[in-house]
Image (cartoon, rainbow, N blue to C red; front, top):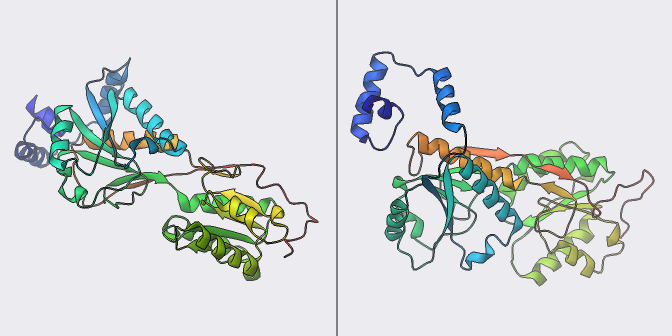
Length: 330
């Protein structure tokens, strides 16, 4: 029994003992039988599994209610909750405040039989992540967190999604397609947008606009200057206030400009990419379960990144242009 548990990396066997058994098994030429492993998983998966352990969802928002007020993040939760329940886990939210001692939280999690942690989007308080004992837990991040903690990640494939959206706009007859985002977003969307532009003639390429300020008035002025200089007939964006900027501008015929969102969830633009957020939540639990079964804990030396592709959704904000439609005249 001890050997079997050690070969499955179960934490009840000490790390030194597991290492000795693995080395001896390798020396003797032991290899696990994948068919027997599949049979064991099948037998364990029959029926409703008992809930005997918890997965922690760490909410680090100053106002915790705001996290799942975003539909996209609520879909993360739903996908994770359903997958956890199917695997015999209970997904439990833990609110992390600036005043909460990292060691104290770790003690609470271990007392609750928590072996895995999910990190939804949100920042850590300064210095908090550096002092939390991650080595005691398996950890997966949903999306690229602001904190940039180098753990395993499940997120949307933003580059592929941007190329998908660009292609959809071209199919609908738009030619001068621009991108409007924030200055930290090139690493998410920039590669896909610039690569998609390589497929069109140089005179139709519109330089992306990246807002460097959170101030609305400053961003709006930058948008108007960019719009007048480049005359786009369609815009890809993740800025929820862009329709308002467009409506408030003094530019002529802005109603002829097509709009598409990089995520139509939580955005007033109805055409664009649906990022399959519930699937992101589901896959994050599958990855976490794999880490738990392998007893892989802490910050990994090499982090894995699973990318989930989105799908295109048509909407009124991006009507099909007729063959005779002219480009926006300004």
